[in-house]
Image 1 (tube, rainbow, N blue to C red):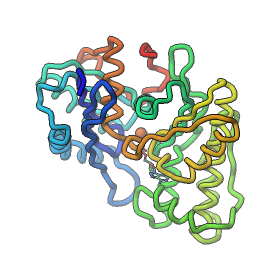
Image 2 (cartoon, helix red, strand yellow):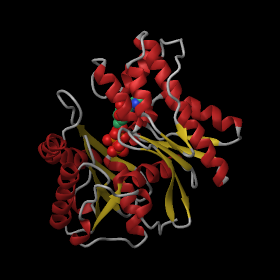
Image 3 (tube, protein in one colour):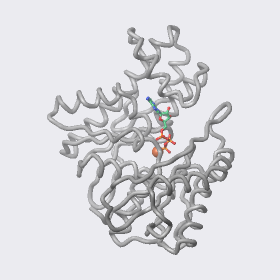
Length: 326
Ligand code: ATP
Ligand code: FE2
């Protein structure tokens, strides 16, 4: 185990996660609890209540799993945004309390950048185009001139939210993405659904409405949703790679647990002599380890924050952050 150890707290939306990482990107612990709404979508205050209830236990469990004592922790990191206000505030409060009681520095981390940084480290791909597909976010991101730039994104809802909304209307449990993947494996008829790519951007709400009105078996519709939505993502990712002259794709976000999406990206990469990388599933979904690691990278680049600078930012954009560590 090497020098610095960071404890990171993730709490942008449904997941309260605590990760402990050393400065060689070894994940010593990665614990989480996910809020599952009884019905409907995520209610921000209920999700925040869930985080408050579980914070103590998850922090304790992470410390036990990492087999470290309080004194071994040299840095606290937390998800500063983007996300749901009440959830962000809960995670930030826990992080500030830990930083004060352990008397160690605190760093607020951009959640989207954390998905990217953990992937760069564990997959060893220094300069990728990131295809980041989660519930709330769908973005194609890459580094250029001191920032992570968003080259393309969804103009309405994130792909994961689209899958979850479709599933909810069809009585599937939350999150519906994995259910739709299972159903899609048994689908065979490709139905025509709206394929919506505008320049480098995509949109999914038309696809959702059409899928909900589409007659046919759940298997065929799930298959058609996946093939259509994933093709859109592959198209914009490939265009970003061509434009930037980059030959690596990194996948991140909960939706990239989907094997078919990974396969489609791999095929595109093979065809252009490029490589694709997928972090292990526990590092793809929202998790504390990615926050801890990004906090460490930032702190090693000389970044630390006063408590006043740890205000949450619900609309924290990927390209708001000056990248001084590349
Ligand atoms: P963010 O705050 O970055 O938007 P998030 O809160 O949505 O993230 P993640 O854990 O990154 O959280 O992603 C969750 C999403 O991933 C859900 O919408 C879920 O349906 C989707 N998902 C999980 N597994 C699969 C799968 N196998 N196929 C498709 N979608 C999946
Ligand atoms: Fe996320």
